[in-house]
Image 1 (tube, rainbow, N blue to C red):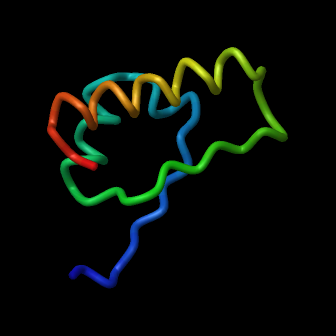
Image 2 (tube, rainbow, N blue to C red):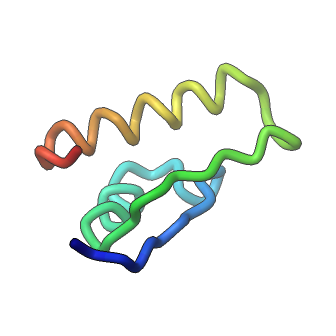
Image 3 (spheres, rainbow, N blue to C red):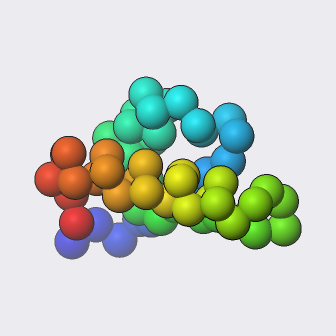
Length: 60
């Protein structure tokens, strides 16, 4: 079992699907959303994108 965890903050710089996919493929374990900035709808869209990519890559 891998003990190292990689926590990445998801925001405007990661809105490109290819960037987000690359982060996940390279070992991102946790997606962090900073609710001090941005709207809830925007964070929901980013969250859904993370879920979609993880499902495509068949990751838990």
